[in-house]
Length: 473
Image (cartoon, rainbow, N blue to C red; front, side):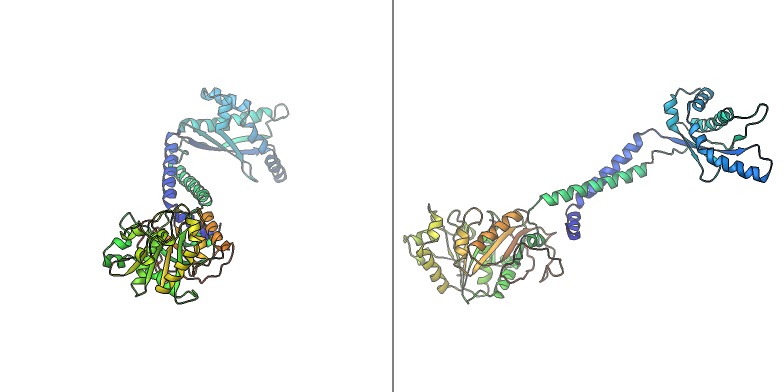
């Protein structure tokens, strides 16, 4: 993953990051509250030599003391000292538990011992520290060899007695809460990264770029349920079709090989918005005076007639078998804005029917009579109908629903078109969330770092503005 991917993870998972950070902070704070408080007390003892009679003796004695002071620190937590402390203070603590409360550290290059005690009582912590200091002096004095009737050459004197500190040393609720929040953030980020790596759904243009370099020539926003574009009043319909007007404009800049255009609109899987895209693009083309015919070539699940509220019982399948004439099957919608050829009766062999000479002749006839022919074809992955049709047309437009189709499915669909020697004109990304589709300027992917793609296809790159309409299937 690149830096951009991690930024995307943070953007998509900000709510989870916030929730787990708050939860971690609350858990840390609660853990601090339930733990018993600990109070610390510190005493300091000075280790010196007593047999020095000159500066040289004193210097040698100090050097010797610095060498053995570490041993005295270890003696402080031995049984000989701890048993005396327990006896003096009448403690019920075991020797092992008492030793865990005591820390003795010799100062570097000095002859001072720092005795620290952490206990649940501030008064007892100070008493233990002072008692350890006194009894360590007695123990060392007893262990140090000396001549009869002389003083021990090493003495330990308490120079800074411990005092009771009423402010608990631990736990610290704020520190616990901070650690809990950081832990929650790390956990949420790790979960988001794992989810990002395991979630292969296409969500935006960047995800498309991971699969292919075929251009995204249109995007539409996800909307709630509502009527399809053809069923809306003309004024409202035009106001909600900015994406398809942009798609129409982008198609005009493509080299399609002739003035007449025949295009297949398909998708990888079902319910990605291809039929709505056919209907809306057809209306956008008709708005600029083009003669447009929309052909429902999805003979397995024809839905185009329903988009316009037309009778779909007679249509393409009936024309191909010679049951009705083409003129009898064609229907106009609105003020002769678009012409629609419904799917007709569902045949038992749609794939074979679309490969007949009758279909080839029909496609040629429609291309002569209309400026643009749009075929609403079945999805590419379940059946091969769309790939076979696209091979006979100017090219295919593949609709991809954000958050629904997966990168592997999109890649497999594009490969099927490539194997059929069909030209892929571009992708239309539908059902994009407003957050992902915030850019509303031409060249929306300008400046974004492109990822390595799997293969190159002969197509013209362009991007379109975002839009505000997404309808049914």
